[in-house]
Every structure is written in C-alpha cells, then in structure tokens.
Amino acid sequence: MRLIETRDYDEMSMIAAGIIGAQVLLQPDCVLGLATGTSPIGTYQRLVADCKKGLLDFSRVRTVNLDEYCGLPGDSKESYRYFMDHNLFDHVNIKKENTFLPNGCAPDMEAECRRYEELVSELGGADLQLLGIGRNGHIGFNEPADDFPAQVHQVELTESTIRANSRLFDRIEDVPTRAVTMGIGTIMKAGRILLIAGPEKKEIVQEAVYGKITPEVPASVLQLHKDVTIILAKS
Ligand code: GLP
Image 1: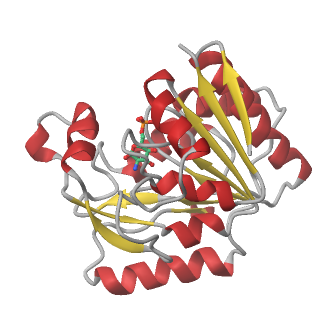
Image 2: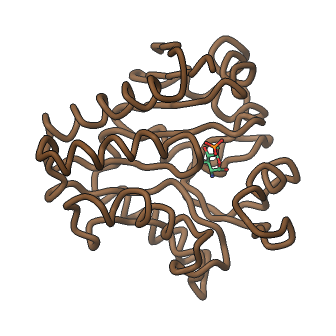
Image 3: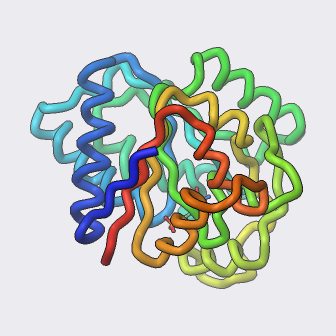
C-alpha cells in the first residue's frame, strides 16, 4: 500500500487525476471504476479540464460505478447517475452507453444485483477503481458488518451514513435508507485501487491502513490488495 499525504484537497485532486489520466493514456480502452461523494469532485474537474484541452481521450473508456441509492430515478438530482453525468460524463467525450451504474429503481433488486455483478465481470473488472471512504470505514456502501460481502448486494444504510449523506439532500427524511453496492469481493477484483480522503477521514484511514483487517472497518480489507494507493489530504 502506498500512502501519499497531500497539503490539501487541490493537491489530492491533482495527483488522483494524474493517476487516472495516466491509466487512460496507457490503456485507452480501460475500465474505470468510479465513485461519488465530495472527495472525487475536484479529481473529476481536472479530468474534464484535461479532456477539454485535448490531453485525454475517453472515447473508448468504459466505467462502472460502485453504488447507487435504491428508489431514486437517474434524473433525480441526488442519484449517483445524476452526480456522474453532471460532474464527469456530460463534460468529457465518453460514450454514455459505456457508463454503467446499478439501477436503484429496478423492479427486482435481487436480479439487478446479479445483473450488475455479471456486467462488471464481463468487462473484466475495473482496471483502476477509485474509492472514497466513509467516516465509519465504508467503501462503496459496504457498511461495517460481520463479514465482507463478496458480490453486488443491497444494503440498509447506517444511521451515521444517512446523517453524513443528508448534506446533499433537502431534508434528512429524503435520504434513501437502502442502496445497492458492489461487494468487497467485486471491488477487490480491480487491478489497481486508488482511495482518496479528506482530512476529516485521517483517523479512519489510519485504522484501515495500520489496524486489524476486519469487516468492522470495511476499508481495512484493502491491506490484502496488491496495488493500492491512498491519497490523504492534510487540510
Ligand atoms: C458515500 C458513497 C461512498 C463515498 C462516501 C464518502 O457514502 N457511497 O462511495 O466514498 O460517501 O463520501 P465523501 O467523499 O463525500 O466523504
């Protein structure tokens, strides 16, 4: 595991965008695993800027996102589909049909979980998976639990995650209580993993990197992956 500490959010975003950009340059048809949240916004802005300057070409890139809320249609502004379109896909030359997220409104969620797991697997997994981290150590929406979920599955969000994510909703009551997420097994199949975190995540990042490997701290499983880079912003 490589742990890079940066001066601030901007420097974190610059380095993360550099790593993702290098992946796209070296493998133009790569599969990028993408994340939502506040942490990747600056990274996406830099990728957009580089694409607009003609430095990056997303025309052959495929993307798989980690997760989606249950019950929010893709055109609802709090959905992760909307977030991805708005922050990245609408501003780069990616083909929309090559961008994949779980469908949180599928009529049969069990079937949707199986479909998404198969899709990720048919794409050969993510070549590079970008991750954020929750304050309780969750990655994707894999909340602290008794075991590491292997595959795409539905989750009941914890109180702390609902509270943390409510800042992006008008009212806390509007935050969905369920989500669908890649499993820890799905995430661990990625060729390389890049986790980015702001200063408020310092303690949980340290616990994940140096602490016991336990599903109580889902991100601690990353200690078992062969190629993980963590960028932690100091301010
Ligand atoms: C959500 C997402 C996670 C993300 C986390 C942290 O719960 N499902 O994938 O890592 O938020 O988000 P932020 O970067 O806003 O702190």
